[in-house]
Each structure stands twice: as C-alpha cells, then as structure tokens.
Image (cartoon, rainbow, N blue to C red; front, top):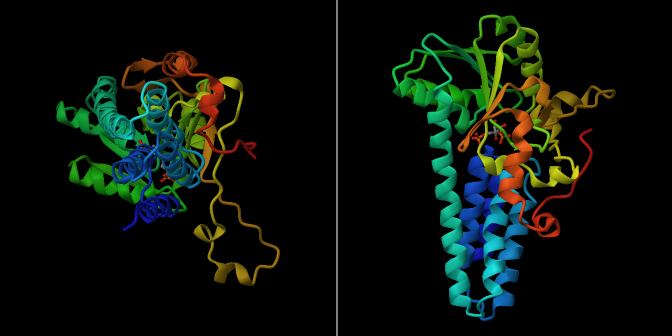
Length: 328
Ligand code: RUB
C-alpha cells in the first residue's frame, strides 16, 4: 500500500474510532509517522520534512480533543527539525524520525506501567473504585493493585453513546477483577459506596482541569458532593501546552446518529440531537493526578507543562495543534 494511503487509513481508523483512547491514538499516529519516514524516497531535507508534515497534519485532522496526538507529532517533528539545523543528509534525518518515534511509543508504554505502579499504592484492600469509559492508564492502576494482591472491585459505567464501558468490562473480566456494570445515570446512586473514582484523561490543562469522556465531570461533581476521592490517571504527554497561553482544548462533537438513528429522528421534526464526546472537570473536583513522574495535585499541572515544554518556543508548539474553538 502506498505510504499516503496507509497514513490515510490510520487517520480514518482514528476518526471512526477503530483506534481510540488518547494514548493509543498517539502511539498509532506516531507509528504512522515512523513508517512514512522509513518508506520515504525523498532526496532533500526539505522534501523529507514536507512529507512528514503532510502525514502529521492528516493525522491531526482526525479527532481534536486528545492532546496526546499533537504532542506525539511534536515529539517527532521537533527532533527532525532540530536535526535539520545540523545535517542535510536525508538518511540521517530518517534515522532521527524513526528513533524519536520509537522513543515516544516506548516512553508512552512505560509511562502507563509506572502510573499503574504509582497509582496502585493509593489503593487499599477492599476499595470500591468507580471508573468511566475505557482508559488504559486507569486500568493499569487496577491491574497493578490486583498484582500486588489487593482485593478491589470496580463499578463500570456503560459510557453512552459508544459503550466503551463494555471494553473496560472485558479487560476487568480477563484480569479476574470483580465489577458491577451500571448505566451512566446511576453514578450518584452508587457514589456513597465508592472509595475512589479513577478515570483517564484526553487532556489536562495548565490550571489542572481535566478533559475526558462526556460524563466525567458529572461523576466528579457527584464524587465531590459525596466526599469521594477523585483521581486522574494521565501520562505527561496528555498535558496541553496550548493551555499555558490560555487557549482552550477543543471538544469534539460527533455525529448525532451515535445517539439516535436518523430513522428514529425522521418523524421528530422538532428534535435537535447534540453529541459532545468529552467534557471538562474543574481542578477543584480533582484530588490527585497520577503521572509517570509521580502524583501531583491538579494545581501542579503547570509545573509539568513548564518542565516538558518550557524550552520550546510557543509558535513552534502551535505548529502542531488543531484549531482552537470555544467549549460550547
Ligand atoms: C476515551 C477516553 C479515555 C481517555 C484516556 O475516549 O475518554 O478516558 O482517552 O484513555 P474515546 P487512555 O473512546 O472517545 O477515544 O488512558 O487509554 O489513554
């Protein structure tokens, strides 16, 4: 398959959510960038960078919310651009692109494992944990707790409209962790029985706000009211550098047919279905963010951002992002 067709296919799979979850989206997009570099037949550094750029922008145009995607693209492209200032050998640049892609993918997997180890220390025998959607980082904490012999049980929301709760259910089943499966609207009903809420992240803003699957903020609100700990599992490449200069994370709104089919809507001439895929949980409702570098309060998100992106000029960062829009 020609490289551009391969990249287009990965982009389509991300858009259609055959590839989903912020971490996996980033890894698969970076993998596509790596394959573009490996197969490149370009002869000049400029052509090579342009080919990679085209692929990166195709991948970026898929889903706008998971900041891991532009951060993954940045990780590779920045290193390629930096190498261009030192060499004009395309073969060398290819090596840089491949090496940095592998590095990003490897670091991302290690980060999830670390989050599992670090986060599981917060869990104690008998803990009842509530989770939403399907997050590999949140599940890593549960997996690690189980590995360390802690007896935990999970409450899993179905996560309408696309039922990612079923994916979580399958994983927990394989892990032999007992779980209760509930409809999204039963969150408050069960919250008093919950010791900790653990969810993943599509983005963490500079002020510590969390962007995650629609319904997360309602869960946080219920947890806050019930005095239940609300914990976020987020690799540092989920932190959004644009928010350091006050830009908002774009919230994806998906096709209304995911909520109500066209057939069902046909006879309801007054209906208007909205389908936002993510929402924003304010930092006041978050007790801790578990990252691969340790557990931080949401207020320390800015420190992670400064450490990770502080030295990179903002205009360079903004070259790898999607168009900002308002939250609503
Ligand atoms: C997935 C979702 C997950 C985060 C974190 O939404 O909201 O909680 O992406 O996942 P979608 P992970 O199904 O729309 O992609 O921890 O696996 O990166």
